Image (cartoon, rainbow, N blue to C red; front, side, top):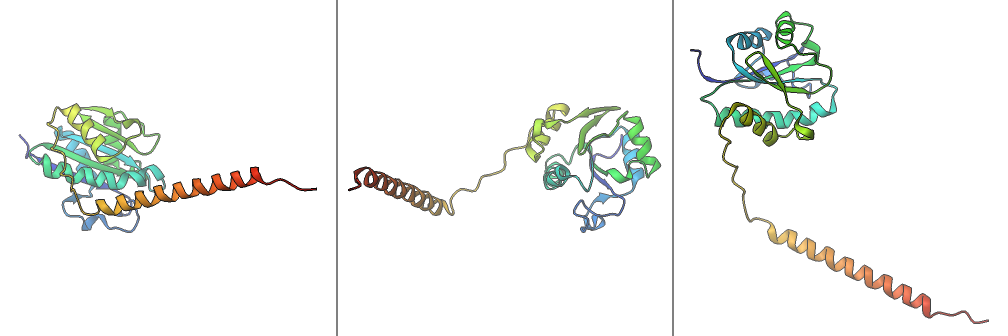
Length: 196
C-alpha cells in the first residue's frame, strides 16, 4: 500500500505559471519533475489532469478555478490517494516521461484545455458543458469517485446590504423621473400647434 495523500504536479517548459511570471517552485508542495507524473500513473494513483496552453484564453480563465480546486481537495480530501496534475502544451513532446504518460492513457490532445480524470488506465474526459469552475469540477470528481461532497462554504451575511438597497432605490427613482420627463415632452409636443 502506498502512502495516502494529495499530490500536486505542475509540468511546464520554463517553470512558470500560466501568467508566465510566477515561479512554480515557490508554491509549497508542488512537484515539477515530469517523471513524477509517470511514476504516479504507474503506481495506479487516480488523477485529475489538465493539459493547457499559455496562449489559450480559456486556459487563462481556468487557472484561478484550478487553484481553488487544488486547495479544496488538499484540505477536504487529504486522506485520499489522489493527484492533481497540470501539463503545459509545450512539454507534451519535450519529455519522454510525458510522452509515455500520454501514450499510456491513449490520449490525443487536440484542444486546450483538455481536462479529465484518470482512473485505472482510463481517461474520463471532463467536458463540463461550459462550466470549468471549482464547484463543477469538484462535483464531477466526487460523482466519478463516489467521494462525499464537501460541505458548502459559509456565506457571510450583512455588511453592505443597505448600501445596495439605497443604490437600487436611487436607480428606481431615476428611472421614474426619466419616464416622467419623456411623458411631459410627448404631451407638450401633441398640444403644440403651428399657427399660420
